[in-house]
Structures are given as structure tokens and as C-alpha cells.
Length: 223
Image 1 (cartoon, rainbow, N blue to C red):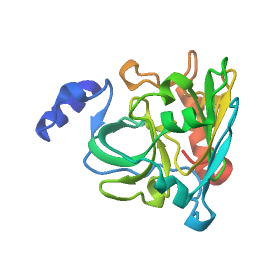
Image 2 (cartoon, rainbow, N blue to C red):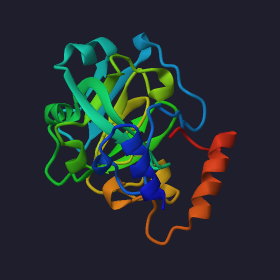
Image 3 (cartoon, rainbow, N blue to C red):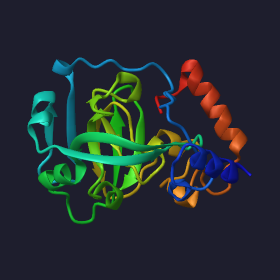
Image 4 (spheres, rainbow, N blue to C red):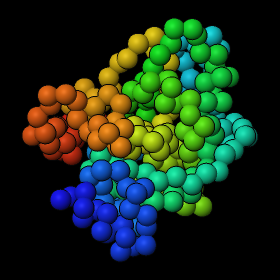
């Protein structure tokens, strides 16, 4: 029923219903679903690093990030809370290029992404190496607003949006998987919206709702 409503809404908005993953509904707004306070990081204090299972770890200041080759693309985004937003313009630096610069070691398989504010999320390296995965600092033709992850966020458009960590500050390359905030609390380790990988096997949705309530009260990190 939810899927049918979503496709009807997409058609009503003049959008292609076939671009909508199962269980999603399109929105023309950009809902803000952060948990906890929004970090406000001055650009002169911002930094981003790649470290862990790499031979050439490094860190970037804001001006150094902007001096790198920039990529512009348009992608849809899909939130696990069931909204999707089509045709979002993005600008940023390809994560693939950053991982190549760091010289990932043989045997590395995953990464743990760290954000200002304490949030973490895990991803297979194969997902981070796709051409459209960015450290994004612009959306909709303007600098990324703090509520949407500015100054910079990870963008992994082929996975649910909780994997696209807001306020990104580091990628830690790992030799194995290590769960992040939501993955420790019942969310799926990968999060493919086309496979509806919302929760891990056997997880009770009520337990996840309780975690979300606690996080909104200040006991969890930003989503």
C-alpha cells in the first residue's frame, strides 16, 4: 500500500515512478532529521582526514579541500524514514580520489566514517569507491547548510541517507567491518534502498524507535 501511494505521488508530481525505491515516497522539500545538536564548525577549524589501513594517511584543511579537483553531479537521495528527493545537484571531491591518495593497504575491506558531533557509520570500501560518492560541500547550487551536513558531508547516493554522514571529519580505513551508530542500534550494515535494507535481520522495529526517541532526547549522535 505504501509503495503504491509513493508511485502515485511521484506521477502526480511529474516524476518517474520507476526511480522510486520500494516503500519510498517523493518529496520536493528536504526534511531535516538530525539527532542531537547541529555542529557549527568554523571553516578555519574544519579538517578532514583519511587514516587507518593506509600507507599515506593525510589531513586536509578547508582551503585544501576546495583546491582539489571538484566534481558536479545530480543524484536522487533516499532516507530510511521513507522519503526520496529527486535530482539534487551536488558538488564536492570524489572519495575514490582521496582513498587513492591515501594508498589503501591490501586486505582493507571497510571504512568507518566519523563526523563532528560523534556520529559514525560503516561502509564497504567498494561502496566508497564508486564514481558518484563525494565529500560534498554544495547542494542545490549553494554551500551546504549546517542542518544538511555543512560545511561538508559524505554523499553515498546509492544507499540510504544515514550512510551519507553529515559533518564528516574522517574516513578510517579498516581491515574488517565495524558497526557505526545506527548499525549498532539495529539498522542494516549496508542499507540498499532498492533491497529495502532498513533493519538488520531479526531486529524489532520497536527497539529502533526507542533508540530514536532516546537520541532525540540527547543520548545519541546525529543522523
